[in-house]
Amino acid sequence: MTNASSKQIHDTIRAVQWHGDHLRLLDQRLLPAEEKWLDCRDATAVTLAIKDLAVRGAPAIGIAAAWGVVLAAQQGEVLDQALAQLRAARPTAVNLMWALDRMKARIAAGADTAALEREAQAIQDEDLAANRHMGELGAALIVPGSSVMTHCNTGSLATSGYGTALGVIRAGVAAGRINQVYAGETRPWQQGARLTMWELVRDGIPAKLIADSAASHLMKAGEVKWVIVGADRIAANGDTANKIGTYQLAIAARHHGVKFMVVAPSSTVDMATVSGDDIEIELRDAAELLSVAGRRTVVEGAEAWNPVFDVTPASLIDAIVTERGVIEHPTTECMRAVFSE
Ligand SMILES: CSC[C@@H](O)[C@@H](O)C(=O)COP(=O)(O)O
Image 1 (cartoon, helix red, strand yellow):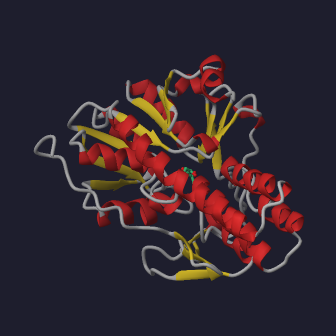
Image 2: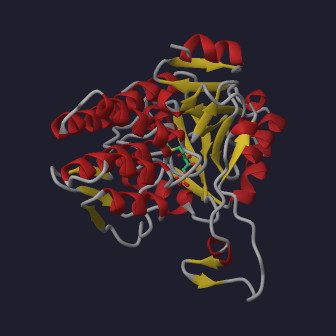
């Protein structure tokens, strides 16, 4: 214990589990009402689970896809086809393409099914190690006793475990640096309300849910010191795609003198994408906006526009935390220094 408000964190959730001949996923569409597991036995089932958000969060998507390739190899499927269908499941989170490229390189090198299984396990294990390291690095930036705000879900559910932004929050709470968390509900899919609050309450972390639209009001009150978010793709200049609503949080944070931290493993960094303008933003079904919990809330005949990510310019980001270190005030030059192999 480093001070009176530090806390033991248990972090017991492992939402992506390999069971030798199938991939078991904690179905995130049903949480927190139901804790139901979904067993995927081939690459098509994994592809559907990614598309339909049974598994979501950039690192978790990549890990699930890697196991999808292992299932395809076990089933004797055409691996190029399995790779292609998994790759097309969602467009924005680059961890998906990164993990599949790793599996593809092993296939090209003649790896057998057992070797592919070892590669998928390595992808999963490396993610957990990265999250724990990022947790320490990010928490060290936070003044003890701070309140912070987060958006979407970046925790154990979105990763191999522990989390990215939520990993920093877990480490910060454990070290007594964070004593209060505010989580935006993250309309329309409510990753913050349904998933982040579930994780925070399970860990006994002091947390309050806020409507997304309450964020500026909260910041104006001087309540939060940092906004801490994850990422789906970080471009070579530091521009960061993350859950819709992140960009407006960054604008509000800068306006109110609140610091803005992006936490993501290096598998989320895409040095081949020059800037955020080149990142494909996923558009999802309007039905996600027109209904709440499956019940239509908007008049029949109404239309909706549902981009599910946005891009925060690097100029609004105070720190990008990866397992390779902290980049303050990111620019292409400092990104290159860390991420160009
Ligand atoms: C560690 S998860 C980082 C991001 O993937 C997360 O913030 C996010 O935007 C998730 O979006 P989702 O649509 O739920 O997959």
